[in-house]
Image 1 (cartoon, protein in one colour):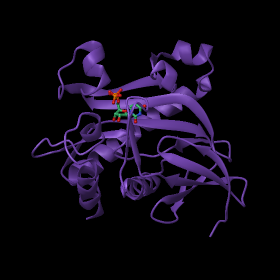
Image 2 (cartoon, rainbow, N blue to C red):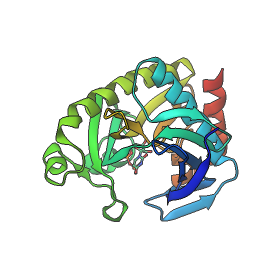
Image 3 (cartoon, rainbow, N blue to C red):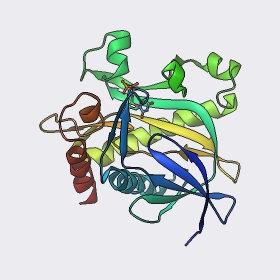
Image 4 (cartoon, rainbow, N blue to C red):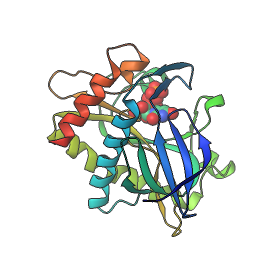
Length: 236
Ligand code: UDP
């Protein structure tokens, strides 16, 4: 069991701790929900454990398919051991159906299916409300090494096909999701952060019920009930 040392950083949903191994960190998933760049907040007992568990299952599915991530193992209800990474300031979003910001920005109808998955890049910056950026901005502002972009895009599309199939087998539609990337201790580029209903849109394939953070964003019902349904389905 790695020993938990100094607190390195506390974010909206997680606390990051150093360990006795300089290359490994512990992520502690908090029981807090936030939306709209932290403007809407709530404390929800059990959320940290649900996100940690769902994220761990997803990372394990991805590892089996050869996708490189920072995940090492789940340590406890709320904790995950990960490789330390130099994180890029870019969020990569993949969309299969229109929802959220693309509906507002470009006028798509919610639920409209795209001909092929769409990949977008956003600048990770709460104060600027995570603006959409193109490759030239990423290069100019050095948000990520420009030579890493093709790998990030290809990995995001591969993850999309793996997870779309995984969720579809469990009666869930993967509408869209966000990935973050970074440089791992061995020099390779891998997925960092969490992959959970906080960072994905998941709709019940039969009823269309929203099972993700939109429940919290738009007061659509008990957030944890949605997350529990996701966990139940993917644990079968
Ligand atoms: N997303 C995220 N963190 C962000 C912004 C978006 O995890 O800071 C996720 C979001 O949950 C959704 C996808 O990325 O699954 C696309 O989000 P969108 O651009 O529609 O933004 P939103 O309207 O959700 O803020």
